[in-house]
Length: 298
Ligand code: PEP
Ligand code: MG
Image 1 (cartoon, rainbow, N blue to C red):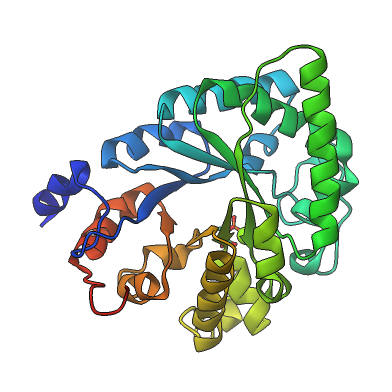
Image 2 (cartoon, helix red, strand yellow):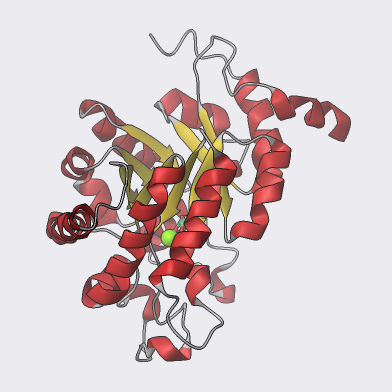
């Protein structure tokens, strides 16, 4: 059976009726790139960039980040690579970051909230991403967004970053941007959020824990945690419809994207892309290719 799957390495991500689906890989660091290429993913849908900030003594410098992203861009070539800006917080810590302990880090000052408090750190990352954008097909997205005000702040910082690069005549591309939909609030305003960017990427790992009000790490809730909860599935559908209203793409990058029991359901909802761990690329590709949407979708 593995041999059958391996034959799919060079096949397209297309349903029986010819609907093209984006099938991307989730990675934690650059060493995962070889398996992404091996399995023939069409790109990177989620680079969890915070890992480069962890397990070290001081902030990564802009240049260090730039070189890592440049390598990512060059390795992927024409294929897209989405960098998720640092999703740090009291749960993803390093001592130099000096993030105060919190009673409830899951509900805490994490993701974009922390980055907007630490403008210098955030700006260094954005500058590194823009500088590297000249070398390939990079995109970026923001974690844990729950308001338009956060987008106002981000847009302002991006203008500053671009002005700084222009001033020094450093080349960059106007890369595609996206918002992660990870909170019920973001779901409810997903149409407004879609207008701000090129795509929405649903982070169902966090979205599920916030919707069910269940810590995804709590062992006591293991048997009660239902990641197929109809509330979550309905939210995915809402987000896809909101994005499409605004002519934007919407996909899923949480673990559930790799669940082949749901592939057909997601595609029927109109999901444009799925982003999964490299080892799941081929099983999901198989499920996509076995799906027939001709009776459901115009
Ligand atoms: C998610 O929340 O679904 C997600 C993809 O981000 P992370 O798992 O890194 O929180
Ligand atoms: Mg998340």
